[in-house]
Image (cartoon, rainbow, N blue to C red; front, side):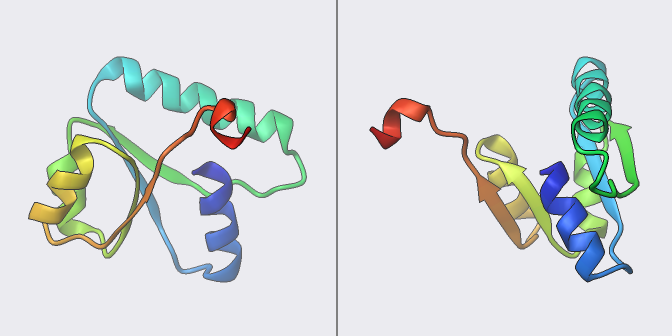
Length: 96
């Protein structure tokens, strides 16, 4: 999703990005993944992310659209009437 956000930001500079982590451990994992992305892709400008813990419902009310991994959050987004793009990571064996 970081690369997707970078592409969107380049095309639409007015966009803002927020990540709502459900718990502190996930928050720390997100920070690590963003730093890893920046190191691996120094040529791609990484957008700013407003990262918070435990504020999923608030962000769903404030957002105009979302990106999410498949799971419970998709049901929450539907209840919040938030348009959502859902991604699902497949096992490489799926493509054989």
